[in-house]
Length: 134
Image 1: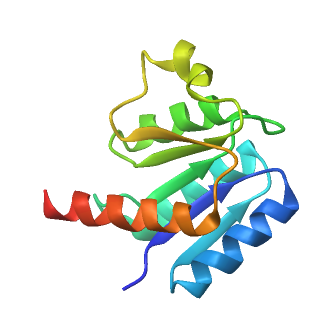
Image 2: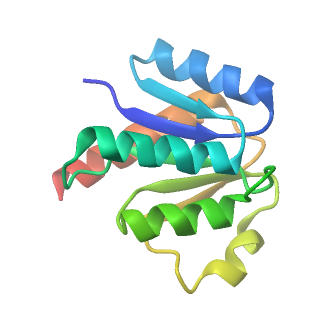
Image 3: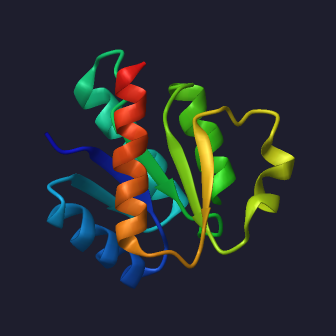
C-alpha cells in the first residue's frame, strides 16, 4: 500500500518532480503551491478522515514559501496533530529551525537541498517502515 504525502513548495517544477517520482513508487501525493494552501489541504484531509490517524504519512515543506513559511505551516500542523511526520526540504540547512526548536518535535527533520528524488523516496519509505514497527 502506498503512502499519503503532502508536499508544499512554491517552485512549480519541484512540485511536478515530487508528483512524478512519488506516483512512480505507487504513493499518493498532494501538492500545495504555498504555505497557506498546504494548511488548507491538511485540514481538508483531516476532516475527510475523521479519525485519530494522521491524514498524511509525511508532510514535505519548503522553508521559504509565499503566504506562510514552512515553520509557520509546521507549527499549525503540529497543533492539529502533534505527531505528524514533517520533513523540511530546504537549501538553508539546520539553522532554519533554531528559532522553532521550542515547538518542533522529534517527528520533524531536515533534508538539505540538493538531493536526489530517489534519496527522498527511500528516506520516506524507510522512515515510515521504522515508525510502523514501533
